Image 1 (cartoon, rainbow, N blue to C red):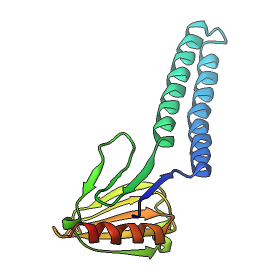
Image 2 (cartoon, rainbow, N blue to C red):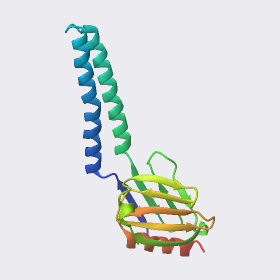
Image 3 (cartoon, rainbow, N blue to C red):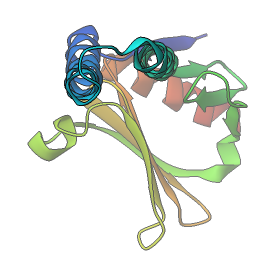
Image 4 (cartoon, rainbow, N blue to C red):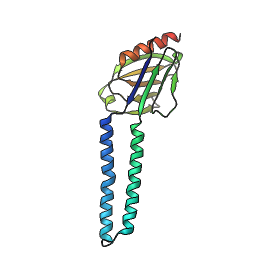
Length: 172
């Protein structure tokens, strides 16, 4: 019996880059605004200091909340003999697929434009294609009987292919 479990997390380098650029984008204008406010009041800015600290604290808390949400992003795939499910982000309900719903599947190496997508979910209503991309090396393309297509990124193409073949065989 082949069981497959994979958890993909956001690239830490990307997360650090986003954190530094957004903190710089928040702190820079706040410092300039504070300096301009001090010049306008002639240097006596006690009430402006309190307002500045409140705004800066609020911006910092907002940034921390956004980055904790981004850092928690991950794609989880779980395939066992009788169950295939996945979810992204981790706080949403598992999406389950039965063997009867799968028309065909294949594993492909990601192309350059798919590697550029980084971590994201995307649904195209015209092609009925849903993408759940976190890793950028390979993806499995599931064609469903209802005409929809699901793309799931993976770092273990052979293992997921074997697990899907066994899952499909056990469902018949």
